[in-house]
Image (cartoon, rainbow, N blue to C red; front, side, top):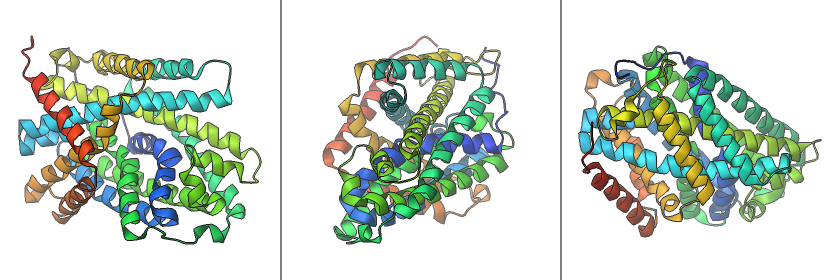
Length: 412
């Protein structure tokens, strides 16, 4: 019913688990190889730059969520501080990018899990993952959070095993030449790797279900980003040392390739298992975040009013079911290239609005000062102008489509 609200049951550990589950996925298992191809071993510097920019954006999100602890994240902040059009832009872009990405992640999970258990076609595993994780979300955010922590724990342990098991196999010669493509290569790698850090926003999207949000959310965001930077840096350092930047660049699964060169027992199996759970963690957090965004947009009638319904378990069940169905459709039909290509622009627009909203906050609401959101905004602008014009155009077309759909009369 409309008067029901979401339950505040997520503590600091749950919030950090959601953030890590959203971050530690395709980025560390796939995107590091792409970054190595444009910068060589110096993508390690790009990784740190991306982490710093993500930290600025994360602190802006945390500051806003502490004051406005409601579902919807930047959609809510944009509405309150910038205006309805800004808020809608953030919400629509979030939905487009995450729904398309979720299908890609589901397909990725099927491919990895098939290597562990080659009994069924990978697509069957992808479909089962979407169905089971949707059901887990319907059981309530506390149970979903517990499942997420288990998933994240397996992923973290597998990556830590890779780091410590791989150190003896590191060859210093693989770090030379360190920056074959110069400063421009490092800058491009930073832009690519930035998107690997963006999952922390899921914490802000779930702000309405976090206990003591003013204290918990800033802590959760800082811990999540710090752990992600350290983990990504350690894994990337060992990967380059084991197989070289060129080897990473030519592989669609660089960590699995690196695992084959490590002498530690069972390393390849452990990394495949970690990749599978990483994909599950991202998919679970995406269903959580998308359904809460639909809830927030339904409340303001930017989406059909049915999405604001909350059941007796305190979860937006209509939003979860709709999210699961759309992800299943994307998974079965395959990735829509047009949407996926525009995802980079949509993410930068989303975080740009986050930083603008933080800048607009009254002075008394600033936790970290006004310089942090300005630095975050500068980072978003710098990376956005490095994107191809076709990507920017695709993003603008998707945004315009959203505003056209918004004008269609609905029964509220």
